[in-house]
Image 1 (cartoon, rainbow, N blue to C red):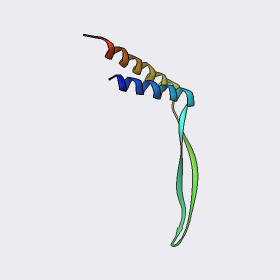
Image 2 (cartoon, rainbow, N blue to C red):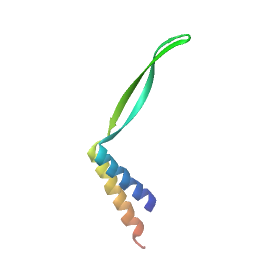
Image 3 (cartoon, one colour):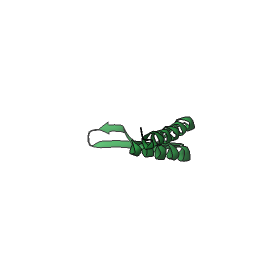
Image 4 (spheres, rainbow, N blue to C red):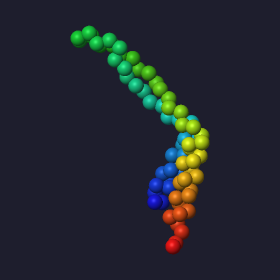
Length: 70
């Protein structure tokens, strides 16, 4: 449970710092037998700050809950 909490905190902080993540996608435009043409586009997926903040809070809550003795 501690590891999951730490992972959530790290992902939340990265989401707040970068605001999203990007990737490159290759798309086939023309395919005429041996002749092929592709285009490469860079796309970005935004991560809302509310989601990143919630991940940080949830990670902290998991760390606190796992450190308490019953």
